[in-house]
Length: 292
Image (tube, rainbow, N blue to C red):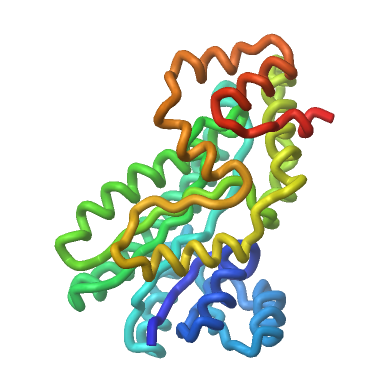
């Protein structure tokens, strides 16, 4: 029986993944900052006729992480798969986003992965097997406009994941990175503004929200990411990178082919129409509808 611990399981991708993996016969523990946040998870699990065990875990608190891992290990014997899913957004350009916002986003999106992995890896290493899946983003592939704190965190997840994969390979531990495009989750509704104290970044913010507005017309669904998480844990032979969601496959495929001079020139596009046309040319993703 595969035992999985999924962080941020009270909503969105984590919640769907928890229920989906439980339906596939896994023993699943879903973490959240408080058990009161798990009502919807319990309802979804009951509707599918499965059980997801809730566990309290604040990924920004090392003691909380260690307690949660110890609780799951005591109850289930071991943790076979760790899904580092907990995450938050963070909008703003580098000139205006406060350092406190960078710190907050990094603490959840990056240090949270490190805390949870440090707590779980010793038992995986001792057994000689295990799987860690980190949820990244296309914002770790392209520096999405006016999302500097979020982008910085997701670029860091890329480097962290690549390093972990190489470090842990000798111990039989597989590491996978999932880079979703736009997926319909609660994080979208929580990120509807951006700092603009100078007034100089109206265009940047408008283009940021146009990108998401276009994607949210036909977004990926959390259930889609849940299936990818299962594939990342079970594929033989294993792969390192996976993507899904609106814009994910196109951006991940085309980014390595793109010259940085083209990316910089896109930022200087004088009109929204030229920006949308340039974005489509670079990535094959149409964001025109987001401006309407």
